[in-house]
Image 1 (cartoon, rainbow, N blue to C red):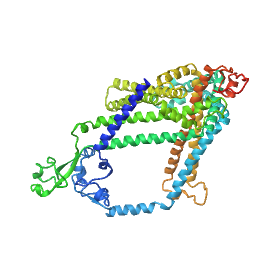
Image 2: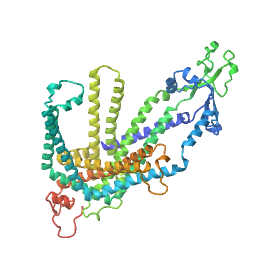
Image 3: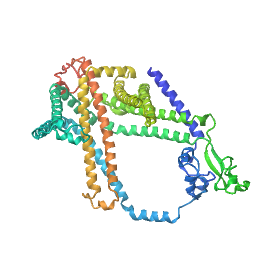
Image 4: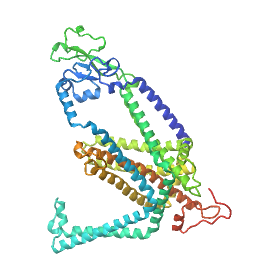
Length: 595
């Protein structure tokens, strides 16, 4: 199955290459990148290289002669004279340029850019420091967060009881209020606060019971998080691997965008004789009905219509290739989704292989192989391309169905059939859940592929069975990890955002070159840029850490089921995990046991 999937992936890649060659053969992106004059020649290209701008003689005709949206969709030019010019010298533009020069402070642009860059560097260092320190602070953070949640619930119970007692003394009941659309009024009656009190008390009791019965699994989750921090510390190159994934994604986007651009500009341009003065009744016979060549057009050939001109109308849509441009664009989009999912799968399998080599090293860090990330990347490309392509294909099919449902839902927005809208909403919800489930299965399947080298179907089955046999540990580890990483992202993004606000608003000074808020016309823009960049950096670092936690967790479960601590089958887990589980390895008589 996986071999067939690999062959099919190569076949689709070949077809994608053929599609790209056809698009590049017939397409011409200059139609979009450069403006054209009335004769169809490009501005800023070829003989018009020194004249990059386009001047419309009468812009009002662009809006009055044809429908504006139809012009955009069909590629119809404005029925007015258009010529190349080298620069804009009219008075309004000159005034605008002078105004822009008066409000822009060009000398401090370099300082501004450098200060954005410094904020992103701080975000990267804080993210790295947070991950490395988790081996020491993870237990304290987890228990503090758990106590904080329980404390917030206890305060909520106290507040609800206080509000209930206050309104009970005032004899305010819901029967006195009745039904009203003012929801704030319901906060003035005792029954509302009694309901809140009961709900919060039940939730608080459930959390306490879970904490009591799952405390050992929480300790295991904390130990795995600490072990993951150690693994990241020993394999620091894994933190740079998202850059490779990002570069491959850029290649996919560039190929898709280039192919789509060439497809959109495929076909020869069609020119027709158009009367620039539509009030002349003698021009009706030739207006938009006669083909012409702009390079050899002469208005004297149409004496009955002196205002005739040769204008570009649209691109030729005749021929087999041109008639299937829409289908080719859809095919290009599907190939793009598949390639993106394949690149993400390649990154996950590579990281899983690197961190699995750390776990299965009996003597850490001595037995960790050299260059584990490079080795895992090469193994993934050499042995696991078929499995990765097959998993990416399954996810792509689900995403295509979701896109189709979104398209149908957009068409049903104006429909008044409530049943159809309800069915569509249910379908969208179901396939959203299905996509999340497929991503979960694929992620764990890629980990098993990296560990054992088996095909996708077998790996997905084994991973799912292993997780279902330890479902409570899965839930606890997932929630504890999510809580820690959420707190980490909040710490990084919030801290860097606050620091950038004080810096760009001029409230703090670092050196003599620091500027005040009056040097920036809108200091919120660099702050938003720094916050967004900090989030991307933190997400990249934490995604590697999350993959490490998932990999070590599956390795830990496999270790428990395969080994028993004997000399022949020793445990590969850390001593901390063995102490929590009351397990130990028997000391070998000669030498050290290696995998």
